[in-house]
Length: 149
Image (cartoon, helix red, strand yellow):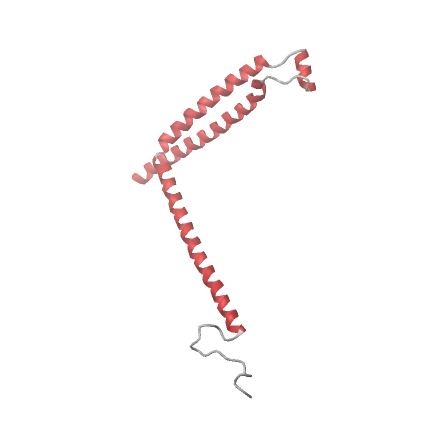
């Protein structure tokens, strides 16, 4: 048997894998390495996001009195706008034959009548956010006073 007839085997000094098993194992290693690098990158991104969130929450907590005051003013403003819209809708609401036309879809309702419930919903949401901020401010001020004593 000539040396030409024998399949060539790779020497240990060669950089290519000599068998299918070695190629498979090296590809698994490459995938595992890539997954490890992705995991490290993901962990770093989560840590960065966590640190940014903590800084944001600390800034909010430090300015809680100003934030609560601003939200309170916003809630009061939206309540006034919703009240004016409701009063305008009551005045502009169709009556008589126009009301029948609106219910049948022949005539469209005035815009203020359509928008008034939306404005009332916005006012209710602003009031809820304002109340939450106010309660948080009171809670933190009370507990901050306890920790200082």
